[in-house]
Length: 90
Image 1 (spheres, rainbow, N blue to C red):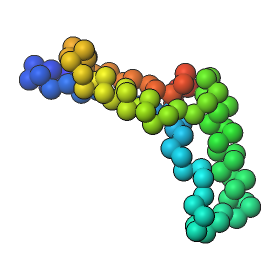
Image 2: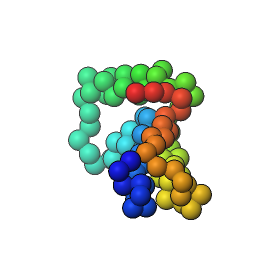
Image 3: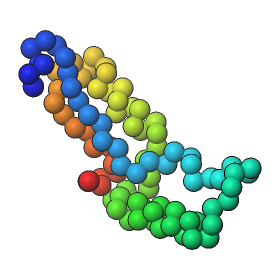
Image 4: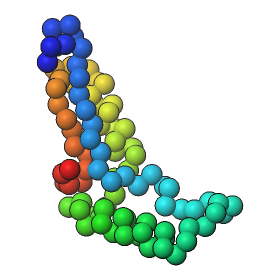
């Protein structure tokens, strides 16, 4: 808040689980072991379970939140955290 009088705004976008397309394994990559594959599936399943909207977010949704903070419409917004997490917290 000490930067407010200088016109500097400080805000934060806090994303939840995001589908970044990294679940697919490139054809020439070292394949994951069966144990690693099960571990990855477990993380994905738990992420869906922890998200009330029951889906992963998209990178474009995070980018849109960041663009909002940078837009003139948010010129009076400072000191805020915007959770873009499909209703999940933490």
